[in-house]
Length: 125
Image (cartoon, rainbow, N blue to C red):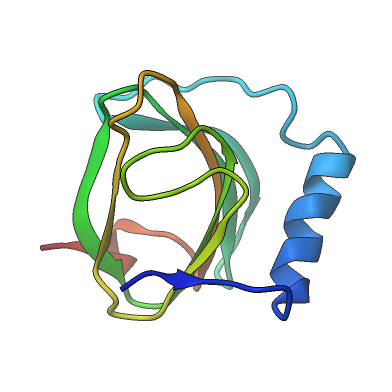
């Protein structure tokens, strides 16, 4: 089950909104990958956390997976089968989730992963 965040999680919302207001993610530089999505802007990436902006092509899908930590996802643009624009989602450590973009539009989202997003911290099921 998705955990939809309410106004009580001000820390993450403030971080995302501050990034937006500073224009940090307004000029993405796409990095081409073979995946259904690409990381366009890495805002913070250290041992404690990763904060990055991703773009998912129409018809794209990230398979079911979980993280060995907490992940917050905020949808900037687009709606899809699993996520809605303007919504903030929280995934606890070990909580399986996926992203399926069945819409004809690109999905743009910000992810905050604690601890750092690494291949070792993401497990596909």
